[in-house]
Image 1 (cartoon, helix red, strand yellow):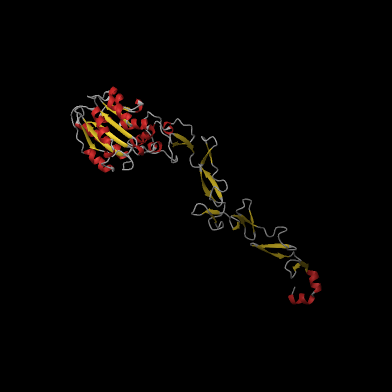
Image 2 (cartoon, one colour):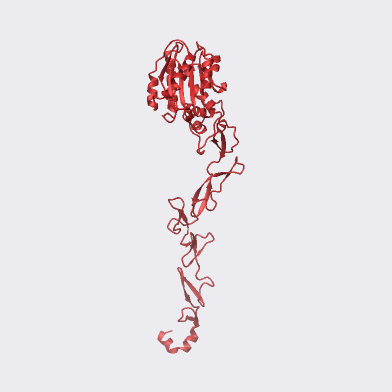
Amino acid sequence: MRRALGTLGCCLALLLPLLPAARGVPHRHRRQPLGSGLGRHGAADTACKNRPLDLVFIIDSSRSVRPEEFEKVKIFLSKMIDTLDVGERTTRVAVMNYASTVKVEFPLRTYFDKASMKEAVSRIQPLSAGTMTGLAIQAAMDEVFTEEMGTRPANFNIPKVVIIVTDGRPQDQVENVAANARTAGIEIYAVGVGRADMQSLRIMASEPLDEHVFYVETYGVIEKLTSKFRETFCAANTCALGTHDCEQVCVSNDGSYLCDCYEGYTLNPDKRTCSAVDVCAPGRHECDQICVSNNGSYVCECFEGYTLNPDKKTCSAMDVCAPGRHDCAQVCRRNGGSYSCDCFEGFTLNPDKKTCSAVDVCAPGRHDCEQVCVRDDLFYTCDCYQGYILNPDKKTCSSKDSFMSLCPLLVQRLDI
């Protein structure tokens, strides 16, 4: 029964002010220690799972409850309805109003949507008389927790829950009637406000009392009840208490828990600790060329000379020798996905492998002139020493005297 009622605590917990979510974390949370009254947004509904309930609110509207205070009680009820999983097949809600007399404002069978329930709550008027709490509990058993009024059959195993809100001392005997209600399978939560008699609350409530009896100083701070209900109904959840030994993620499992890990991690054989997964191991990623681990995930990159495609997975070779992509002074030569620099004819590559210097074409060993090399910009021509003449091959030289003795006619014609 108590585990089933833990679901109610989840619903009540959602009345807490929503706080900003923490980052990354993956989408899983740890609860703050009990007693703080606070939790991260989403902590309540991850720690508790809502199950169907037959839930009856019994509210005190005796003369000690001022009209403005009674309005705060109605606001409290409306906010609770907002957090419940209301429906014919989920949680059914009834509201009873009592003072010297008891009025069933609406039974469990009347409304199955939140808007109608809240509208009915807004119309409730105080009865302004005595405080007959025992009479109210008996009326709940006789007039509300019946199949005719919407309570589901026992074989449905739907928990029957009562939350009593009162600021006074009962003017009738509640001990026996409350005991009968508990024996009938009704779990009772007693909420005291202001001058409420704590002993009477303890007599009415189910065991254990520290989980079923609550108190607030005034109706003006009745919102404190949401925090107290959250702590009580989620306390049985080991993940909520923080008493588990999971290194990363605790997952509730039918009254117990299992450990899990954040994305990018895997559970170790001890079933408690986690180890980072090598997301870049072969077969674990979709990168075409290079996989780079990135905090439990990965990003793709490309080899030099390639660029990542818009799909962020595959790579395409880029023209590394396109203007602006290289730092060669004269000639860029592609070399696979990279490049190397070269120079024009007549120039040589400097030690920086980027810039070029003009070559001395007439340096020894660089030309084929027999006698004289004459530079002509980046080229050269051959010439001969005085007394010699350049042969037809434009490279070698012959003595002028020898030349004239062998070819006098030619010399005459040439007027040499």
